[in-house]
Image (cartoon, rainbow, N blue to C red; front, side, top):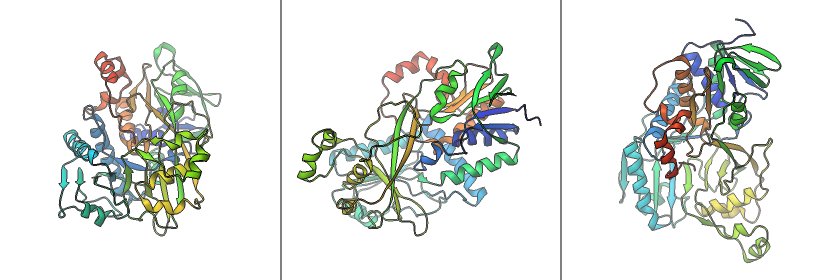
Length: 450
């Protein structure tokens, strides 16, 4: 094995690049070089909320089918590793205090069932609802439970506001340790021969319209395959091939702090408030905010969500609320609004009133995050580029950890000429060449972004 050749070179050692290396190795492509200037999993992969779900809207069933496959792979990896990355199946809990939104929850569950997410169970009276265990994933239901019986909601989710009129508990969902998963995949790929090179992809030799070599740290690395898995930098790396990708970046942050006052139970699922929110401010606070922060006095969008983090005696909670999704160029390290922790805490108090205990004295919080690199319709790119031997595994938005296995598997199948699953065209760059798809984009509705 020469240090100047490789069967495949992957730009980016985040979860997308590592998963691609793992799946290439599973298909017999073992001399794989992962190139990254930073340590593995350190640019955006370690900024995730580390959740997963098969709960996705249409059009079509491609997203649900792909995520079901990715979760299948996660479960296989959990079984073979002794669940070293702590996969659970606590679910996603969508909650509302607006009676007008209850039919929306039911319709969402029915649509998800039609797309392959699993059956709908409606609980209008106390009875058959089966809560999720805090750990493990085996033997749990799929689909969703729609609960409109308020006594059942109070029994199983007492931390929610008493104004809650309905919840939807999506079941093939949960979270895991992204770092542990990534390192497990990396070690398995290394066992097969994959190598990690610290450096920068500076150029590519694409004479005759195909990949011949990658220039890394000023040195030529001969290879017939190149995979662009550069995360937020997937666009600039594609430009080295003369390819323009239809992607953009949004800045997303999360808040982590020790919930020493016990606002959220340690056994709670990922909990999401689907109603718009007006932040609770005192009159004095409202006067102080009336100038440059006046936006925080009006109605903010739905979607504030949070979950407990860590095992054992960990008191940490994560809160996320992306109320500003303007496209931005990625810069590193990213900076965040100093007011974000307070806004997130006040926002989630609408769903979990006990968080109001922190208003008088805010906890010491850590804010981190990164960039969601997205396509217009928020579906990832996994497949060939218009240069022979070049592939992309990117635009994984805020769902890279949950989708990395199916995306990496797709790229590996394309790169080795293996049979492709029915959903593969939905994630190929070539979809944008289809006039029917372009027309569909103009009518696209819910992108599935939390």
